[in-house]
Length: 124
Image (spheres, rainbow, N blue to C red):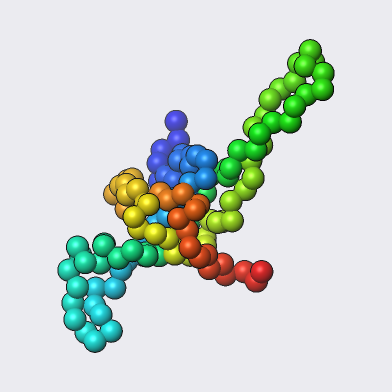
């Protein structure tokens, strides 16, 4: 069995449906004027940002109706892909995020609909 390393520990995770796994950026611990903010204030911000780590397959598309129902076909689920891609920076609504700890790291899982904006390094 393959051991978990820093390189492959997230490869075992499968994100389902229209969900996105995000590694939150460390929030600023100071305001622009220099006041230090406690962690409880930082976590209550409505909009957070983070790096997209993994994305789910997308929204399932209903299967087409077969004209010949007696024929056996293998039903493969088809998905409409999500806009988020691995490596993007996402601005998301904190209220819809589900926090989790995996291998000592903090992540959040948010639905695609909770992502307000994506920043992608490559040209569109």
